[in-house]
Length: 160
Image (cartoon, rainbow, N blue to C red; front, side):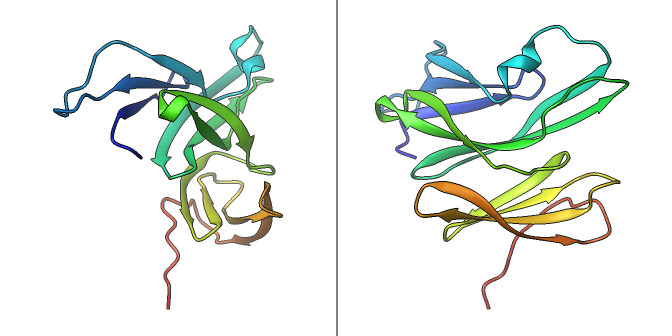
């Protein structure tokens, strides 16, 4: 958010990488660091078919938020989630500090505004839009859902 850092997601490796931006707007190609967007247990050997891909990233004042789409079959494991990464050392480092609980299937899109995170699920089995609010200024809590009957591609609530 301060214009000094570039955050890059790598879809199939499930990492966010951090690069510096100088005063002239040039990107320094030196990798400053990277943080995983999935649970570390998914990086170990397993049986079955599983595909997990970080798919979306948004920078806010307090967090960098990423969504992950996972699909598994034949005993495989995958993660579908929305993770919040806190800025450390002015934004030159990131730390995974929260994950929205209860995300049932692949996340297609999320939208955050005014203390609410909306999550759209992209699955033929779970056709949901989920609503999360921050409870007691600490933890994000699922406050509602709507089964919309189709794969969700994008979610944007409108202020009336």
